[in-house]
Image 1 (tube, rainbow, N blue to C red):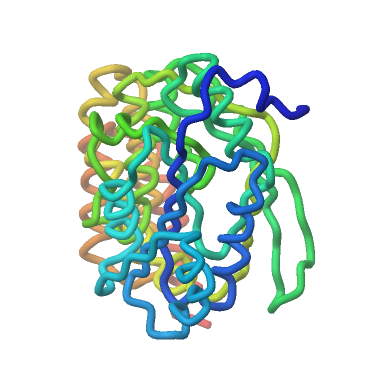
Image 2: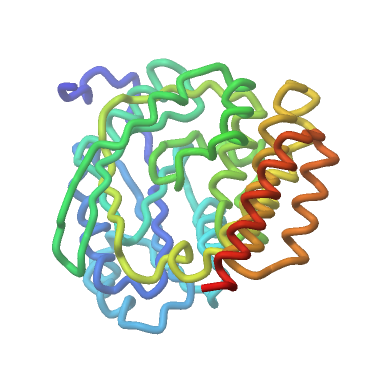
Length: 314
């Protein structure tokens, strides 16, 4: 896609919100990737979520040169930091970038073109998924999200079935999207992004997608909640599933089968992976109530018992 600055109907300010927690090693490169955008009318809001490393020292150059707005808060999580940024943003358009990722130079330009010229509410993009081992890049691939190009209500059901597209750094939004659906749910340490994507889909916003990788996402950086506490990840995923289950079944009764299988799989995982037998029992019961299936119960129970026997006999 060639440069489209001359094709923009207007050149409004765009706010890019960067939440950070102990990311001193990476934060400068993230900021530079925003400063190096082909579209220049951007304000950068860095929300420091209680970092205990030398993050602020790394940011002094940008602060002193008035290239960023730096905000500090006690550690409350990424959702809270993003929410503070949204509330402080002075523009009609908002983007997000994690402190350890980067925008490609045309990210804001191309997304803003789609938003303004086609009167969209948000636009998402593909990403470069980059794998790290230590500080070394060992592989890079394009991760496509073109499967989200569907009607909002269908997308809502798809998100519940397979999950969404990860963090909000893959999109540019009109600010009033958050005025209508609310801010990020601070009760969810993870999967707060899935919850937000679902709310956006339910609302029926006009959403387009650019089939081009415009964000570099790094996988393998230490410190992610997804690597520290996998049971918490599952707790939050289950909470989101249950939150929207009734609405989804009302729209599409056949999705009961999907929910029942997901709940059953969660139950097995709680028991086998985390020894959380109370949570496991609740998921099994919830699955049976949602959509009884004797074949699933007998087959899964048989496999479950075999696994338990093998584990304790070895």
